[in-house]
Each structure stands twice: as C-alpha cells, then as structure tokens.
Amino acid sequence: MHCNQTYYDNAYLLYIVNINKLYMSFGSFATATNILCVVVVLSTKQMRQKYGAFGLLSFGDMINALAMVIAGSVRNQQIYDNSFVALPTFDCFRNPWPYFFIVGGQLPAFILIVMASERVIAVFKPIFYRVYVTPRIRAITNIICVVLSILFLLVGIFFSYLLREVCANPTCTTIGSTGRIYGTFNYFLIVFLPFVALLLNITAYVGAKRRSVSTNMERELKKVLVSLVLAALAVILSALPNIILWGQGIFWSVPNIGYMYIGFCCNSAVDLFAFFFMKKDFRHRLLSIISCGYLNRYFNLLKVTETKVRRNMVQSVSAKPPARSLAVKALR
Image (tube, rainbow, N blue to C red; front, side):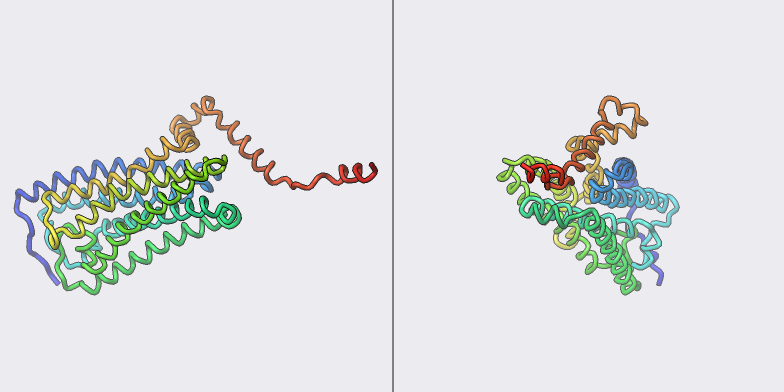
C-alpha cells in the first residue's frame, strides 16, 4: 500500500522542525542524566541490591528520552529530504522511536508500581517484608516488569500489522503506529499506573508517619518520601500530559500540542535530581564516580561501608549465649 499525501504546509513544517529541535535538546539532557543513574547503580554490588528498581526505572526513562532524540532528528531529516509523508501504519515501525516510546513509557510505569508496593509492605507488614522481600524476589520482580513491557510491545506490533492498510500520520506517534485501540491501552498504562503508585505511596507515607516512633520506621519514612516524590512527578509531568495527548483531535483540540511531549521528556530527567538530593549514599557515590574517587576522602565512603558490614554481622550473630558461659553457670 502507498500513502503519498502530505499532511502539512510549509509554515507548519517549520513549527515541527523547531519542536523537534527542543525534543533533541531535552531528550539528550534526560538521556545523559539517566545514564549517570544507571552507572551509579551498577557501580557496586551494594548499590545494585539497594537501588535495583531505581536503576531499572532510570533505564526505562533513558529509553523514553532517547526516543525523543531519535524522533526529533529523523523527522527533521525527513522534512529536509521532502520525505515527511504519510505511511502505512505498519511501516511506521521502520522507524525506531515507536519501539522506544512503548517500552520507555510502560517500563517506568511498572517500576513505579513495584516501588510503591514495596514501601506499602515495608510499612504495614514489616516482618513479612524482612523475611520474604529478598534481593532475589526484587530481581525476579524487575525481570517481570521488563518481560511485560516487551510482551506489550509485541502486542502493539501485532495491532499495527492488522492495520497495515491504514495510512498513518508521518510523525508515527504511538497511536498512529498501532491504532486507536492499542494506543488507548498504552496510554491507560502510562497514565493509570503512576496514579495508583502515587496513591500507594501516600498511604505508605501516612502509615509510616503514624509509626515513626521507632528508628526503623523513621528510615522507612525517608524511603517512602523518595518514592512518593518520583510518583508525584510522574503524574504531573507524564500522566497528565498524556491524557491530553490521548484525546487530541477527538475529544478536544489543544493548540501547540507538541510541547506536551517535552513534559513527558522532562519526567525522564527527574530521577537523578530526586535521588541526588534525597539519598545521601547515592549522592556520595555519584560524586565519587564523577571525581574518579578524589572526593572519597571527604565522604569517608570506606568507613561507611565497613560500618554497614559490621552492623550486618552483629545482626546475624545468634542470640544464644556461648556454650562455655552455660557450663560455668551450671557449676555455680
């Protein structure tokens, strides 16, 4: 099937070129920040175990930001080459950004739910959390999130194949590439899941606040606050703009709708700043990597590591008194 019609006049094409330049700028910045987050999380075993879900969240946001860069650069090149024309829906997947937008939108949404659920369990079922929420369980949960996002990507490609006789907008958005049914499902995930994650985090925060008399719950309160901030920013910068994008041209007509994608991209850049200002060990590790270890002396990183190891050793010691002590008591 051939779709040769051109959608836009020269004035609107100039507007698209300018928007795409913003996509490339914001997307490049967001990609760089998330690469830093992933590098920090992967730098040590302790960081991988503690911040594995956050590292995967940053990876998903990096994919989304990279999609912005690729979409902006390729679309502009198509405009300059006079090849920015309508395509059959399935042909949109010859471009890389539909793949990245689907995975980069859904994977962070799944991870936000996982992070929020973990905080709820830690606050309201602390014993269950310590016994069953192990590093192995966290790793399996993260793998499930990746598998789900890839599986739903394949479903989107299948829907696109079913609509291969339909001509799509040359921008090849997610709805344009996969059709209205799957596009609505995709928007439902990336809009609804952050809202649910926000509600779960609010519930966990209120519960931790009421139970903050203990030291453990005070630490949990700080963890909940970080997860709460990430979920709230996702709702403001990602979920709300995507609601507008989903209904554009059907339920409402918002002028300059292209700028909404910039908010979606900015959400991909908040991970680094949220953890930098709210997690001390993450901040120190990041500055240590950037300075090639020069700033370690100011953070006492080695000392902190030894203290945590010793604390774990003390917790693992049996509560039973030594056998020799029992023998002395028996003789007395």
